[in-house]
Structure formats: structure tokens, C-alpha cells
Length: 61
Ligand SMILES: [Zn+2]
Image (cartoon, rainbow, N blue to C red; front, side, top):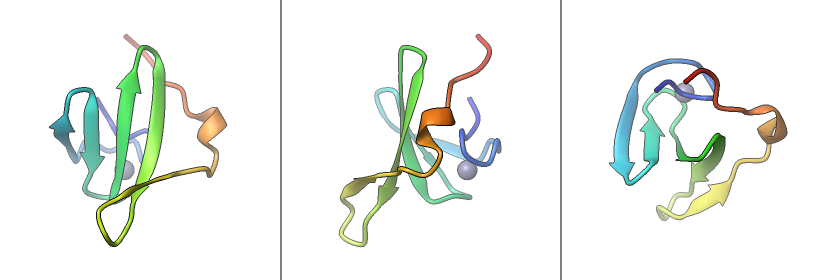
């Protein structure tokens, strides 16, 4: 598992199919073959991360 944004592996698992990138400071979820990225707000809430989201596809197997 690598970060869908930076491709790095500084990934922490924060929940079931839910991960956090320590480089990008974003959370992302993996559902089937789709990765959804969230920004983490100042209050800890998750905000949709829209930039290039449509191009993010989980690769490989
Ligand atoms: Zn990242």
C-alpha cells in the first residue's frame, strides 16, 4: 500500500481500510478498487479532497 498522492509508503493504518499519509497529511480509504482521499480539518473532521481525485485509481493487485 502506498499513498495515492505522493506514492510514498509513509502510511499508517487508522481504521478498517482507512489509512493516513504522514507526508501528505491526508487520509484515504480503500474500497474495492477505488481510493477516496480526504483532507483532515483542523478539528479532525474529514473533508473531501477534490484535486485530481477522478484520476486516482488503485493500481496493481
Ligand atoms: Zn502521501
